[in-house]
Amino acid sequence: MELVETADIKLLAKLASKIWHEYWPCLLSEDQINYMVKNFQSEEAISEQIKNECYQYYFLIQNKEIIGYTGISNKKDYLFLSKLYILKDYRHKGFGKIAFEKIKKLGFNKIRLTVNKYNTNAYNAYLKYGFKVIDSVVTDIGSGFVMDDYIMEYSQK
Image (cartoon, rainbow, N blue to C red; front, side):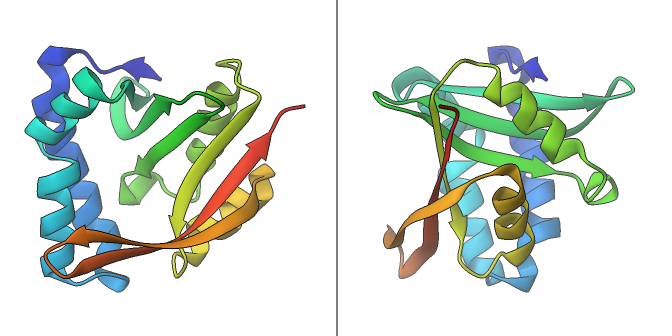
């Protein structure tokens, strides 16, 4: 994992848009994907998250090639794993687990995330990593769109 610097935010936003448009069409409408990319993964949104919400983004690197990214945020009682996305050609090859192992080494007792209830691949992967469902939420994100998620938690105690 390589920390995303300010100069790399534009590259990160392009990568995020590519991955989101590869991954989400089976679960979300094109309109919702575009809305979420614009509001949560654009250059402006990422810059705002880093500046005001204690986010850090990391590129996932394999053989000097960027294959994905992760976004984390330090909360009071846990680390929030906001994003863990991998390019289509690199999925299901263990890179998500490698990234999660590195995230675990950041020293937080608890790691939380939200996962779309219908995203069975990610949900099952997080179960394998040792996460447990602790809640279920439907979040209004504006413009008539919602996120229907499980909140999952991993404990390192």
